[in-house]
Amino acid sequence: MTDSPSTVRRVSPLSRRERTGIVALAVPNLEEPYFAELTTLLARGAEARGLSILIQQTEGDHQREIDIANGVGLPATDGLIHIPRSLTVGDLTRRTSPGPLVLLGEHIAVSPFTHISIDNRRTADLATSHLASVGCRRVAFIGPRLSRPSDAADQRFTGYRDAVARLGIAEDAALIVAVDAFTAEEGAAALRRLHASGTPFDGIVCSNDSVAFGVLAELHAVGLTVPADVAVIGIDNVHAASYSVPALTSVAPDDQGIVEAAFTELERQMAAPPGADVPVRHIVVDATVIARASTAR
Image 1 (cartoon, one colour):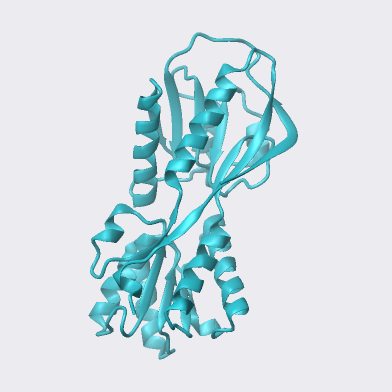
Image 2 (cartoon, one colour; image 1 turned 135 degrees about the horizontal axis):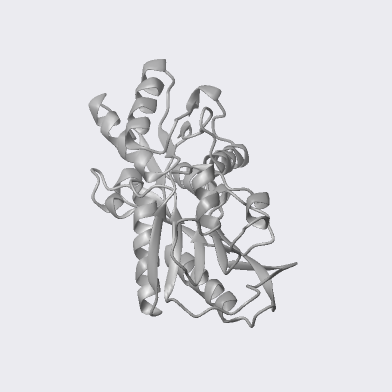
């Protein structure tokens, strides 16, 4: 985990309010397994600190994210952990209800607010490098988001391209297949298009584990064996990765590190005296390849 203190400082709340013991959490979509599992860890982290979590699902809607940042429709809380998908720095600087705030994720990379993120570029580089290490030379990437852009997808695609160029494995535009969302359905549809194109491939980096689950199912449907014919790796290391058939190799971010950093930073802001300058921190957590059967060559 890296911690980069910023020279920019934000002022903590102007007046001390009675503690409520409640922290709000804005999350894009709990149907996505990674967000559901991270929310569970955050709820447990809150409980361990004597706090309760108020979960607000945003669906990535811009106005909804702004409303939650401003406390619209919410009871009084001690602070906010926000996983934005469309919120901007301008939206945050215009908050009508400022208070302790920690941002999670890569959507807002630079801001005068404390921010905890995964190095998505590095996770995809690790994934691609792992496939190369088990002998893959024509590695596909399923996961750029063209019609519905995503900061995570963009960074992971860049990491894939970094590794392909560095390792000298095949660079072929036909190996790149876009998706509209990080879902198993999109992964399966993307694999069908890749297979139908006739483009040879022996490895697949999937933009997340949900996409990978769809890819695994469709590889079986078209008669390709994993990992003998095609090795597959995902990103996020959700719980179900251990139980797919075959078990899915995945790049695991330090989710517990995200939780610990989120509450450490939030509590630091909550404890600051009224009007105090609180240093802003940008924390990037580590990631590790968890090798399983889908790449066991």
